[in-house]
Image 1 (spheres, rainbow, N blue to C red):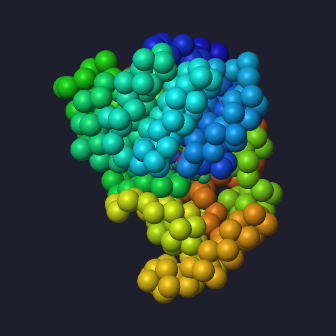
Image 2: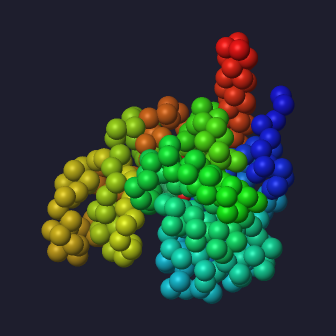
Image 3: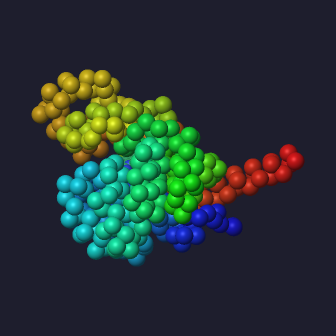
Length: 328
Ligand SMILES: Cc1cc2nc3c(=O)[nH]c(=O)nc-3n(C[C@H](O)[C@H](O)[C@H](O)COP(=O)(O)O)c2cc1C
């Protein structure tokens, strides 16, 4: 099979233009290593910063080049975490949800590639200012935290901005991409590759319980919601403007729209949420996936999935090339 070569595969020496999202709690070393083994680049989820857990995940990924991602506003509270993690020599570091300025120089000085995940054009401008190697344009379809821009217009707008202001900066599309059609479409919109979370969450190597995996297979793309209720229950102070897309379930039905009441009852509801999460209950806690759920019908192995999506995308692009020739 001829490979699907893009600026990303050439610049970062990948077989396929596919990066896995650094998913807090779910994206550990085994998943990241599997994505890299499959020809993409796997990112470990740095989440809210647990140095012992991160060290274990880098050990689990040993032998494969992997990167890591941080929630930027949270990293500001314990910046030494970045210095610790850079000792593992990550291939790349992704910053998302906050100002990348305090961390960009240290990441680049360590020889890691810097990805900045952006939710709007103002973020893209900040990413260019700090000299990011790649911008990830994240659409609202995405699982987990994000904002409001839809990928179909945000990705090409980001591509136009980069072409005009930072032509060497690579662009990845994120949000709602789970198969070869999504990858092919992202390339048509001007991206050099994709970053996928939900599709990799639904892989055997993810740190996700069996009942949460069953829930994604049973849920279609209508079955998610952007909401603050999971963060209120967990008492994680996310900055305004960011919400989390999670599965609609008994927990979101009960509390979405009643955020003030949930805040008042958090002493009871917080532990309830955490216990249900630890027990793998798919109804009474946050189940973290996005609209791509509607494209996911089975739990797969991440390394084989990377290969399959890349070859599906190549086939889709060739079909369209053929159709364009036919129309002449
Ligand atoms: C379970 C889960 C956890 C996530 N955690 C993080 C995170 O800790 N940091 C981050 O930058 N993005 C996180 N994201 C968002 C991803 O970086 C990415 O934007 C998103 O998964 C892309 O959309 P998709 O889920 O439709 O593929 C998470 C996504 C999911 C599904």
